[in-house]
Image (cartoon, rainbow, N blue to C red; front, top):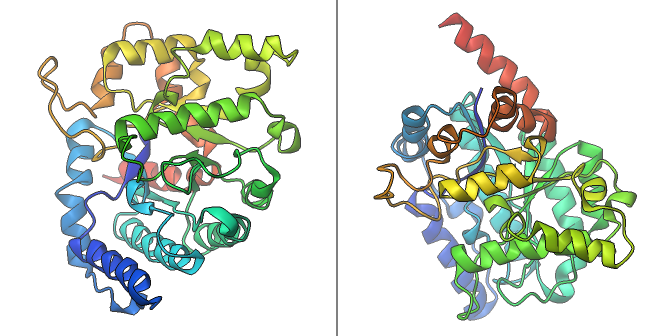
Length: 351
């Protein structure tokens, strides 16, 4: 079974965006609130968005299940206040739950967290733990997105290893769910979003983990770094060296039991590097379709985000590596997926 661990509802019906614009504008103009009850999206609209988008590409490319979350860039945690973020997160997560309910064999939910920057961070982390619990226990979600920069491009928060985040980590451990560490939009005009801020976020989060003992406090905590880890595979020797310079244990011993990387790398040589530097046990298949890059690569004739085709072209992967990367690792990192996978396999067996 091929499990794509990184998908966003980037094709959500336009009504969602219009409601969000009203929410932001009302708060900025007068501090007013816009009720979630004003958002109207029918099941047929959701079906059309999915069937003509993600589901169509799943079938064309041969993938089976996508871990599905709200659009990462649209999380935009800097807008409004803590209540703004909480309501927006609940609206976004409830819509993902509806997608998963309509297509239970194809999508599993990953939730947005109601994070806020500045003085509201600590309270928003506690609210994030509560929203995570709601999404897992009531909506059947299997993980969450964790934004290391809720200021959205200005990096004003403490590192993810700071104790301010511990209430969320305690809840993740209790529920046995991982987080994908994923920044949102960049409002900094000097830092483009998908090709600078995203990759900077992955790299920065990894360095924060390198200089901490977070996993001593949370030995079962699991974090996924998307987009191949940003600069991490390319500069693996630098990270190993920094830890040795500081008298810290080897990188592989201290982080690879808890930190994983996805395959959202859109060229063959990049994926060769990722899968050569990192053990296969730490790599999860992902495409981020339909996401940051939607064009067709003229060198391959495939879309850039068709990472399955790129992985299939690698000669360096053994059959065991492929089984692990394509689905086996996701089942270890997202243990709440197991029930869905067994149900999917039973359904396939009856067809």
